[in-house]
Image 1 (cartoon, one colour):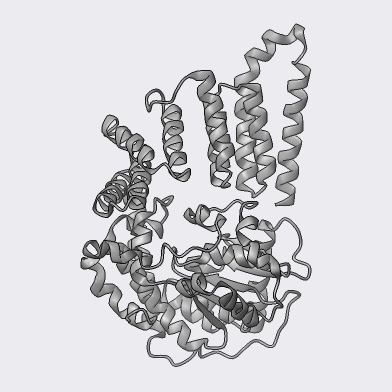
Image 2 (image 1 turned 180 degrees about the horizontal axis):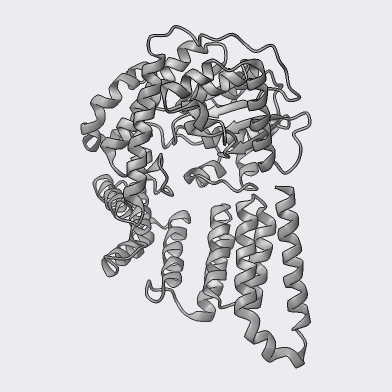
Length: 478
């Protein structure tokens, strides 16, 4: 990661020198001719910086593009959207207002970038508390653009605004439209097919472990240079991002958010009985080699060496791979975020995720519930095998007793209390949060999301039988 940032910074300096060389009066025409290309280069650089987790550097490059071409649509959208994602809503709003003052009021017409700016303005109205205004803007868009690529996003944000207004039936219709539009997007069928294949692999793992009473292998007699990682998992929308921000605010911990630390390992030890058997039969040399792969993967995503800090590996759906972690790191500490299964499946259905094999399951409510059930069925087997390694923390308990639940979590991690945990939402505003929870975790603890499923109970009737065993297993029946 450090090498990548060095390369990007060198390229930025090269662009800066080119702009400086063309800034004299005698070069006005030459500068004008090169502005589009230089602006696009700054924006590409800004995106790469942001994707690498260097947010301030990414914004700096984006602002250079905007300074060079104040009316450039892509530059305005990049800055406004990134500021909104960073929960700097006032600054995002000011960027859009400045654009409208120069170029005219956004009305949902024009090219695709103008439409994206319009939708972002509607979303910012929501985030500023103007839900009725946001609804009106989004409803106008879906009526005027019934076959547009941005329709799924518009319906998704409309659903959230309607939910905020208490119009739950209308909100559910909007979420359904959003998911149906996304299902028709290029590549969606392929992702849905891959999602079905993951279900098959989950069933294979559950079948393999179902009749066992333990992981039938011996612990390796080897050590490496790092303390075993802390694994933070849980079905998506169960509070893992909230826990990630809380833990990352502790001085003794460094979190990685959804990075492929199991790259090169997952395919070897998951998905078939042969792979599961190869995990079981690993010898000490094989385990040491796998640990080296793991730590090498992690180092790629860290800005600096871990030193004395302990790694928190946050990846919700790595809950499927607890056997791999337990084999490689017998003393691994595993934090499992739990939430009422009905709220989990509803929340996933309401989110407009970037499609991949896992998230494609959420485009259909019944498939989403089935994916949840197969995943958590496997987890219940792992929980039986790893009673001393696992600490479960329920979202509802955390928001009701933040201090007590956080203290118990730190006891599990054998860490002292750190007052920075009380300011986790301020810490979150300084980080790029690559999940749909970026809005929520920038706020102090609140309880509004607990029990939301009650408002949508009639819409969940078809999936209640699938979820009921897990409602009972995780003590949400009362």
